Image (cartoon, rainbow, N blue to C red; front, side):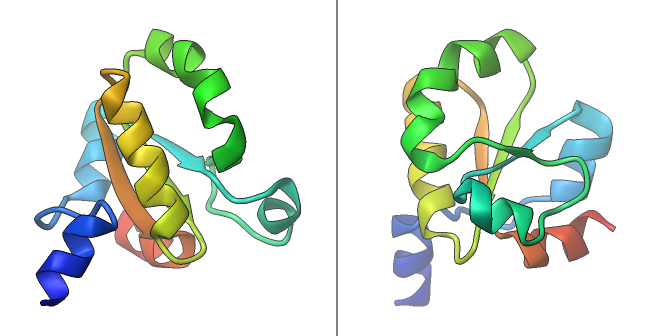
Length: 105
């Protein structure tokens, strides 16, 4: 049951986020609001709120790097991941930004 919920939110099998970032140059995109982002975010992450992500797809595509999406709980980042994948971008749901930060260190 938990696996079904994780897949619905965009989480797949365990992903080595640290390797994705270090070896593949993955970009961490925090899809929370600017206010949430300003209250704390992962080092090196960029803020593109979920409601603006579709407007930034071409810009992200040009970077030709995997994208790791993060938010507060994993729900918005899962939605962003699906939108990016639909546009042909390699994307991963990093879930909660605090949790991802610990996986990257």
